Length: 135
Image 1 (cartoon, rainbow, N blue to C red):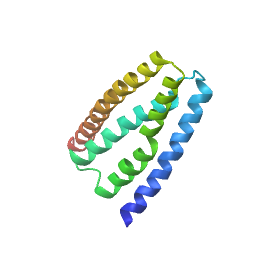
Image 2 (cartoon, rainbow, N blue to C red; image 1 turned 180 degrees about the horizontal axis):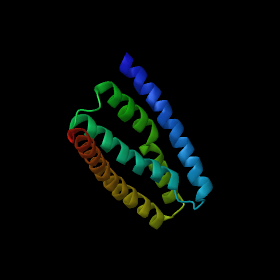
Image 3 (cartoon, rainbow, N blue to C red; image 1 turned 90 degrees about the vertical axis):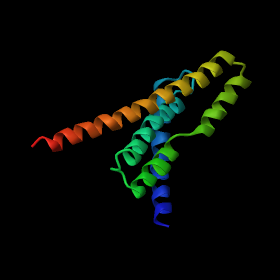
Image 4 (cartoon, rainbow, N blue to C red; image 1 turned 60 degrees about the vertical axis):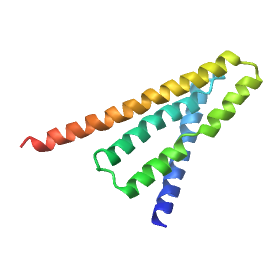
């Protein structure tokens, strides 16, 4: 039951953060291109990769915090359903090139962000290890 509560709280925080980022993106770049969803999915891909790597490779994030951060926060922050809906809208508007660039760009950017999340995790752990082993 405790993990369920952690996931719910994390999900609420992630969803709220997604709303704020998407609102800011629309106000900043009113292009008709789904910039806000792209940002949250790329940042979420980086965040989830870092959290999972820190949890499973380095064992510095325990199961409860992992559920809160990964399933809750990241799950509430990122959104495949919105990505899908926006792609369908672009296709309905016959903006085929924009739809294709959105799909390919999102997949590539999220893949790179995931790799950078793992790199971030490993660099952070190397820095912490170096800091505490130099005496």
